[in-house]
Image (tube, rainbow, N blue to C red; front, side):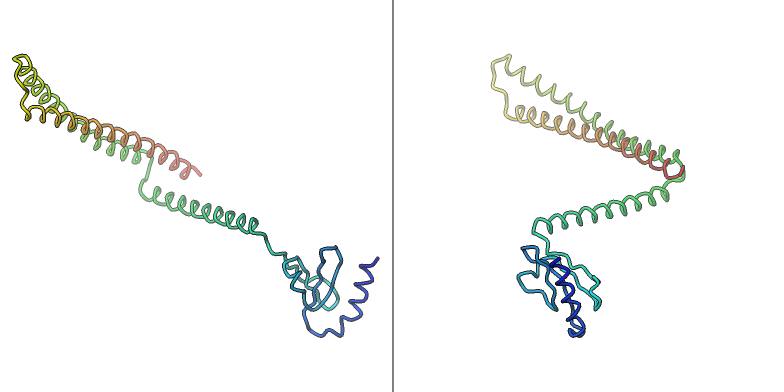
Length: 201
């Protein structure tokens, strides 16, 4: 009942308030207030702007807490990332359709890339075979010295160490190329799947 009295009094004095902005707010005790300005202690709370007839024309939200502001920033970042990912997907789709005219072309491109890597692998395997043969010879030389109780020359020891290192590097190179081949197969499998979806829609 008290609230209606406040509203009635407010409407009585309203015409004399000219064109000043009119606000309605509630204090910490739940008491409703009206005025042409909001006291500083209530500035952070929600308030309503009223027209000359007392109807709400704008609701001014309360100030957000630091946690709420951080949540809003995180939500905005998520939305921006989603838009970025969507734009990237559309760009990739356009490029896919421009690059290939059929699934068969994608398969042929995949085979060519895998074959290029296979050539490198086979070349490395040839090098490895040569390295292993040289290592065997160096170890045989070292064994000859040991059988005759002679010290193994330092250059033979250095050669064995170097060849072991070269073989390890060659093995790593071959493993990397094998991994690249699998990555290409996986990547082109995705291309084919996406291409089919785009062209069947």
